[in-house]
Image 1 (cartoon, helix red, strand yellow):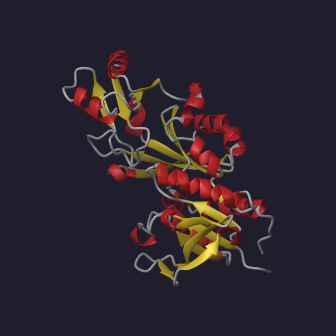
Image 2 (cartoon, helix red, strand yellow):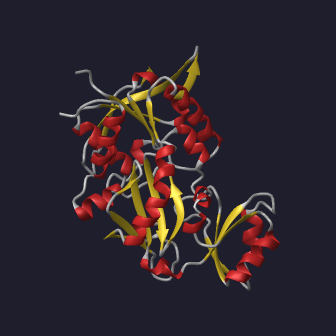
Image 3 (spheres, one colour):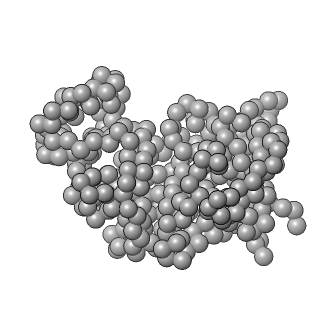
Length: 320
């Protein structure tokens, strides 16, 4: 049987944290199944004569914190040589990212499976996508108008402000209307009233954690990672010092997943991370969701295995 070829578009594998990296978990699963793995970055893509190519490296991975990969010499390959490509590039969601999705889409049109679907990566901004489910989100304002934002904060009493293109807790603020820094921060984040930002009511349930729920082809993994903010902090981001504690999904968590599942499946969003605080969805992460390693370890799961079962079904092969 011909070997399955998988490519992973990601940041430099040399810079990842192997203990926590979900892309590595996926590659380890591919290796376990005997697939050939290649890695490349957005800058390695190019199109010529009707085909899209990547200057990529065949990559061997190990579950070893000191020596987790080996790369062979770079080689140029047509993207259609791959059965599947995982788009695992971290934000920023900038024009380089968007250009990469257009190039990947050319390969998708020639029957390479891309996860997640390139068009849907462009459509589903991680902050704005949740607006499609108004009954599932907290009170929310998207605006660049500073007076409008301040009025919203006054009504809510306390609000969270964040850019539409951030990650890892960067540039997220909690404000009351009388905060002395509010004008300076709003001016900067809105580029002096030219750039929209997200403003949401503050959810006190953040003390119980910002839950990351992973969904594979619309089906939730039965355990979430509750990211408990560090003492005196309000950010439930591991990158901002939060501690990840696994817990079973609640009845309401399953309800929220059920609300978004049909849309995810219809859009080809196969691997998604839902952020939930209390009873509300705050973000729907589609670019490169994480927390596989933490949940696998705490509950003896194989989340990447579940994902790859779906991938195998979609590329019509049997796994022996």
